[in-house]
Every structure is written in C-alpha cells, then in structure tokens.
Image (cartoon, rainbow, N blue to C red; front, side):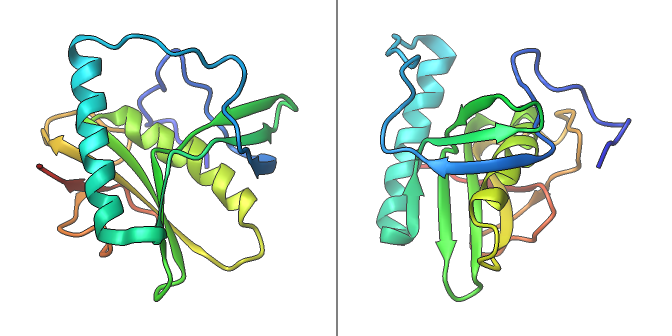
Length: 171
C-alpha cells in the first residue's frame, strides 16, 4: 500500500511494510535507558499514565499496556517496538492497538499503521483477529495535517477496522 499522498514520516521513524516474524519479550531491550522528561514530553507522559490507569480499571485483564515486541522487518534487521496498549475485545474477536497522545498528531497514524499493526498482525497470524487502531488524545485539532483523515469515535469499543480512529479522552 504505497501512497504518494502521505505526509512523510518523522525523520526518526522507520516505517514497516512487512514483518517477517515477531515475538513478545519479557524484558526491555538493553539499549533503553531511563531519561528525565521535561516540559511537553513530561505533560504527555503524565497524560498517558492517567489514561493507561483509567483504561486498566475499565477493561481489566483485556487491557495489555506497554509490552515490548521484537520483530524482523523486510530489511532483515531485528528491531523493537512497544505499543502503548493493546485491548483484546473477546466478543468481537478483535485486537485494538492504542496510541496515547496528549495532542492529536499524524505521528500516531504512522506508529499505528506503519509499525504496530504489521508487527501485531505477524505476531497473531492465524488467530483470526480483526485489528483496529485508535489514537487516544486529550486535544483534537481538526486542522492538524494527517496522512489519512481521522474519524472521531465516542467509545474505544466502537471502532472501525482500516480507519484512523481517534477517541478524545479527558481525565
């Protein structure tokens, strides 16, 4: 799915089109070092932590936050990713990939559709899950340029597959 109309990805982002294999990891990669967050980044981390706690309370064990995944892409290199959360909706036999952002951004689309979804589709290949993607944000500005037009959704259980769903959550 090569689309010339896409806004280019962030410079520090490597899009993934095909995943050869993937596996969950019990440990974070060795290169991850704790860093002190300040300003807007700290604001985003605080929002993500509040949202993660609220979603964990609402969904219980169906909500799986921040799990590290190792994968091999089409270039043969082993890489790592960590979706903010995955929600297992048993009645609809779907997995919802969640990206928390303080402000709505096109980066969320790239992460959801050009990294996490291909990796999770590879990881759960053969289980018959329907994959849904949603950016959960506090602030939504409809004038934000996006590669794909987002659709606002009232509930994270009412999402459409193959759509850039956005859910506004305010603590």
